[in-house]
Image 1 (cartoon, rainbow over the protein chains, first blue to last red):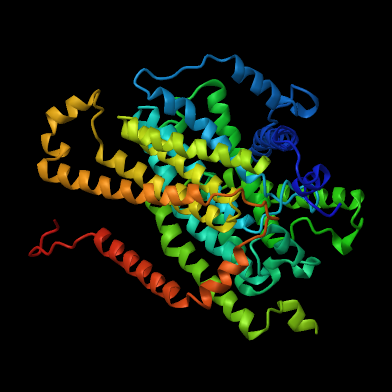
Image 2 (cartoon, rainbow over the protein chains, first blue to last red):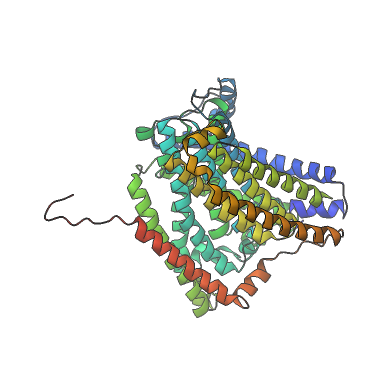
Length: 361
Length: 183
């Protein structure tokens, strides 16, 4: 059981399967994962509304289904029924293309998201690097969405979005790099397997990774265009930013991509710094039960971070554009670089031991 | 079988993207075609077993270069010409003169001769390759980068630092000194 979906099916199919069969099986696996991610994204919108209602002493959606939990399905149906409008001066092809590019960029990252040691689609040896690389497609889609709408608000939103996403990629990447340095590998399985037990979590490994976790979290908020960094869709300045002109399901694709991206980024945060799918004391073993427990551990940590993301959104006021760039280039990037060097020095000085190991051994 | 299927798919994407860059008149579409082409090249690298190169390709070109191109196109603007004749009419210099055409044709002929020779050699010596078990290249590349090729690695880091500092100096607002007045 201790292997990924892709390697399991590859072994099952043997050496020379027909390409159609292979394609069919992998398509099915990817389809299931994509649908689960869609459901998580949909429930994300529900969670957002419910938590914001809670913070503002309101009730939130409570009519559709128990506690209003089916609200996102009702919303999806409503979105599908709406008219699909494109502005007269819009670049039709790019206008229709960019929501799919956003979804493509988000769903491609799910291939390496380590939900458990067995239910992950694949363990790439360059997993982290792949994830950072492919998620930059979202920046392209935000930019194209803004450009193709042929509206000033969309254009400004798209410009802001693209510049923000490529700027904040740098602190995210550097703080992830510190963890890669400690784990000695870019594969997610290597990183998770090296964080045994609560004291093995990289967030508590040394002071530098402790700071690095917060740098990663803040920068990932900005990368997913979440408040307090949601300048691309700042409604008080830009109507609705890059998706001003989008209606119906195309708007929903952008929204869904955003919520799934937040989920992915929280999952990466949990994997990198909070032990990922490690179950306490290795409960459940290597069998199916262990896998289910690992899923539980991963999703608990990820949704805890997801809650904090939503909490931040409804607590902090939005930054100005110049403050945004100041935070990135004058604070987060130098701190992240300092952390990277600090981690390297720590590795050399203390032979890669964590604080706990130094105190208790 | 599946790998060769993916290889053909990636090749088709690469070629389609490249042809799109050549034949579209809208520069934005050219950028997007380039994006497709570069993703296809990354796919080719994957099917040839070079995982790190593939991901680096995606990282550098999709995440950096294409976004930079989109920015450049958008900030400089540009007119949407309906035909090549219109471009020629509006910007006669942009279409080149005798000198540039001559150099272009000569370069094209040299390139054609060289690539024909190369392709002919490949066709002659082509055998169907054995499908090896996939092996990650990350560790090998990492070790050889800091042992055999450490000089090139360090020099390229100096080059990048120089580029970064140059960009910072260019982007820096110029202070205009006036006598006692705010400009």
